[in-house]
Length: 232
Length: 232
DNA sequence: GATGGTATGATTGTATACAATTATACGTGA
DNA sequence: TCACGTATAATTGTATACAATCATACCATC
Figure (cartoon, rainbow over the protein chains, first blue to last red):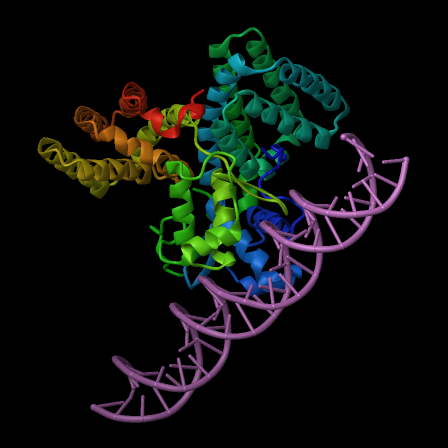
């Protein structure tokens, strides 16, 4: 069996296809391409200096991500992310992160638990210093550890997808320093429930953690970035 | 705004790319291609009588579905579905179908509710007659209605993905006539809870419906189809 | 015999050419 | 003026050619 890189993020960064995919995803999520806008293969290709082939392949991936819709022989149309989408994602994630934490309580390895503790410790440090970028990075990593620790390929895959999806929003959320601290405290509680093998508690805490993150986001009015018409 | 077909299933059936995608997905899920098997573009292309281009595009989609893993400049390797995956999917679906039913209680349209009632009525008829194919078809449709009725693009998308994923297993499950009837009775209960606007009840029933479906599957030993090594 | 390097073949990555389909513009006839 | 059909252009769908990368086999060297 080939010992290929299991940690390989979906679609490599260094092929043209991968770069086109990442670029387009970023541009759609950031709002550069508006809802229902048509994406033309040659135009995108010329803009990025590549031929149609990698662009087309990226389109096929974006379609499965739900970011564009491809109509045969017609074209590709942007299906942007709306405020309603964000709300729904947090609702879904709330349930699934809870499940994930519950499963992780049984399945987590010693190494993963240690990395979690280290993560939280470090995050305390950066919170005190006001290092927002590092905070965001550590927050990402905390959740990734949790996803990996649940020992479910399916759940991990789904959660990582959603995580990616709302990443842009979430990073702005953490930029409010108080939420950064509160978030890390919640991480600590989750970690300690897992460490104590209290699956029920871990589930509830992870569940709440998501709902809190969403509430905070709403309070700070971060929906603005998606424009008025995205509002439900 | 272009009035493109919103019901368009992911990847059209009639383009070469779409057909290759469907064929490969079917072959992977049915076990024709074993775990870790390498898929070669030219070989697949020759087998299906198409060039590499549609095959490559199908590969990119399969990767995002998690059915294969593409290693840059090396190749595509099958990531089969294991018994553990099926178990995890039902666990996840149990939560999400519950959420979906809860949301649908508020959002369902009169037309959707009527189609549901008709669906259940028809399923009773076919159950009595022992028409297994129609039962399976109606079961699929019941869940699709529910997914559409929750009025959440994100949730609908995720649930449809998972539904597709386990479809092959599920159809065999319904083939046991008693489960077909029981399943339809559960559908009726869910529908009536929605009709009575009892969201909490709808959520619980949908939740249980999934767990029951899984239990039944395990009892009937349907994991066999994935071979011994798939068992956890 | 083991090790390492090079040549060769196989496979994927990308670009481009051509075919099929769809959208648009224009002209004809009522 | 409007409806309709046809021609043309634009765009996507597919096939193929070429480039880059990787795996393998073979041979030289120790």
